[in-house]
Image (tube, rainbow, N blue to C red; front, side, top):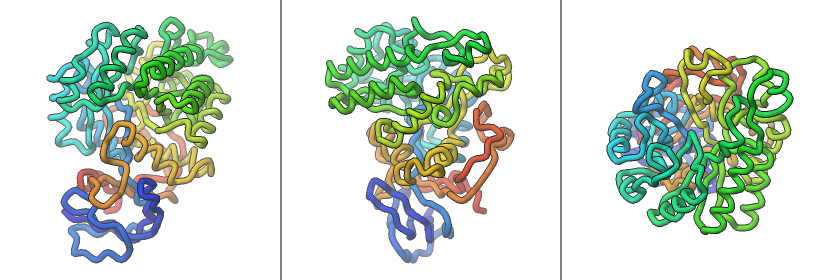
Length: 423
């Protein structure tokens, strides 16, 4: 299929490109980028007034498949991804059974072949996420795994994590750290004034800070790269900023909910605002915005974690987690670009180019010859998030009923249109 996109504002920081022009897609790749491209294409899209950018690379997604398909599965999760412009995602291993062996990884890869987004499995660091015995990194990497994590819980033993870093480096892969000290954790929200007023068990920032400090120390002492997932606290950011300045090979991500909301949302006693790490105080949110602007934060990821309405019904007993792929670009655009904190180019770096670089994937760019994964985004659109209109099986979003700016209008993955609101 050939697709010709005309008159778009093209944003491609990988090539320092910000022009008005055309993009020709053929045989699954970007064939031409420039002005006044003429071609007898199968589909011609007049993208006047729209922004053409690389497809989003979401490096932190829970698809619940295998084992909890009533919440989400690979196909429905990728439908939500396509609606939000996510053309490539990293699937976390806390499935049931755990993604810690070749058979489960092969199952994910096989099922994903017909999905609307590219799915890259991330395997468990330890068997069964128990934090004890390392998985077979070499065999899993050979099968198609792109990184390793026990996300959903931390690797409690520093010694086990140190060995994992060495092994990951040996096979040319990356460790993604869920940084949480379980001896300090266990609450259902952030420890502070709100938790005191609600009289509920809470988790202090220190649960994240202590664990991040350990991971930085391990990365520094081994000279092995380490990626810190879902950063949410001000002190963790200060530690990461200092480590980077000292030359430690540490990268990090945060999610749109952390720089949009604070723990005051929990006064609603709505479990759709509960996640782990939890929403923090306003001072933490402000530090996140600062860290996005100054480059401390490398990537924006959703930590997309679907749960059914029944799962989320009881505020205090509900599992942690929120969905996010369909709203991530609009929510980030609203909070970061519309507010003039960063440019659109910087947002594309955070959501497309940098995640691809960190995971060593060939995406996040509109270079000629690159895979044809791209998004048309209407920066002038305004919309209200209605849960009943969201794709996917679960709709536990903290952005419900919120007015957002900018909207994905079309998504191309593997050279095919997988989401289209232009017809």
